[in-house]
Amino acid sequence: MTTKPKQEDAKARLAEVDALFNSIGDGALATDEFGKIIRMNPAALAILGYKSKEVLNHWFPSTVVAVDEANEPVPLIDRPITRAFLSGHPITEKTYYRRRNGSRIPVSVTVSPLISNNRPVGAVEVFRDITVEYEIDRMKSEFISLASHQLRTPLSAVKTYAHMLLDGYMGELTLPQRKSLTTIVAASNRMNELISTLLNITRIENGSISLAPKPTNLHKLTDEVIKELIHSANAKNIGLEIKSRGNSLILKTDALLVKEIITNLMTNAIKYSPENSKVLVRLQRRPTSVTISVADSGFGIPLHAQPHIFTKFYRAQNVVRRETSGTGLGLYLVKGLTEQLGGKIWFSSEEDKGTTFYLTLPKHTITKAALPATLQSGIKMV
Ligand code: ADP
Image: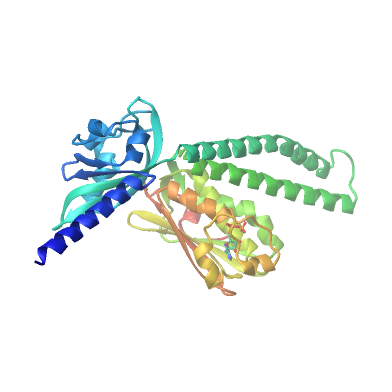
C-alpha cells in the first residue's frame, strides 16, 4: 500500500528533472561513470548542431570535442570533465567546442561530478555559448588598445616640449612659467601611467599578456623603484626603506611586471600616508617563494572597504574625502599581474594606523648570488 505513492513520487520527481533539464536555455548533458552521454538537452544539441541519436550513448570526450585557441583538441587529461572526476569537485572553465559542422564556438562550461558511495558515478555538464561576450570583450580591448596607442603619440609631444621649455631651450623662464610647466609635466606623466595601466588591464583581461621570465634581482629592482619614487616621497618627507633578510633574492620572473606591481604598491603607500612618515619594503625568502611586503603608517583602509579593495574602480571613502587623486585601477591591475606571475596578494590594514600589502611570488629558479655586501642586508634609502 505504501509503495505506490512512493513510486509515484519518484516518477513525479523524475518528470520534474526532465522538464528542468529540457527547458533550461543553457546546454546541459549528463554522462555515466565511463563518460558515455546519457542525456543531452535541446539547447546543447542546438549549440553543437547535433541530433539526439548522434550523441546518445557515445563517448562524451570524442563526441563533444574541446579545442584550444589554435583549434587543436584539448588533451583528455586537461578537460574539465576529467578534472571534475579526478578532484570530485565542480570545475568551471572557458573553452571552445567543435560543432558538428567543424566550426568552433567559445563556451563557458561547468562540470559537476556525481558522487555516490565516495566514487564518481557520472557527471552533469552545463555550458553556455559565450560568442557574444567574447566579441564584446574583443571589441572593448581593441578599442582601449587603439585609443591608448593613439593617445600616447600626442602625449609624448606634450612631454617632450614641456621638458625642453623647462630645461631652458627656449629661453629663461619666470617662476610662474616654471611652476605651470612643472604641473604640465606631472600631469602628462600621470596620463602616461594611466594609459599604461589601461593597456596592461586590457592585456590581462584578454589573456594576451606575455611573460618574459628571466633571472631578476629583487633587491635591485626594488631599489630602482625607490629611486623613481624618491621625489614624490621627498615632497612629503616620507622615508623609503628596504629590508631584506639574508642573501639577496634572485627570482626567475618577469622583471617588468614585478616592477609595475612594486611601483603601484609603493606609490599608494606614499600617496595614502601623512607627511613625515615612513614606508618600509621587506623582502623575505621562503622555501618555495618570496614574500614582498610594503608597509606604511598612513590613512589605512576602513574595515567595510576592505573586501572591495581589489575591485576595478573602487576607492575607499576615507581617501576620497582627503581629495587624493586616483582611479581605483592600480590594485585591480596589481592583483591581475600577481596572479599572472603565479603569486598571491593580501593585506592587513587599520584605519588611521597604516596598511601592509603582502605579495608572494613563486621562486621558480632562485639562486644565492654573490652580490655586493650592500645588497645583502637592509639599505636605508632616505
Ligand atoms: P587608486 O590609488 O588610484 O585610488 P588603487 O586601485 O591603487 O587605486 O587603490 C584602490 C583603493 O585602495 C584606494 O583608492 C584606497 O582607498 C585603497 N588603498 C590602496 N592602497 C592603500 C594604502 N597603502 N593605504 C590606504 N588605502 C589604500
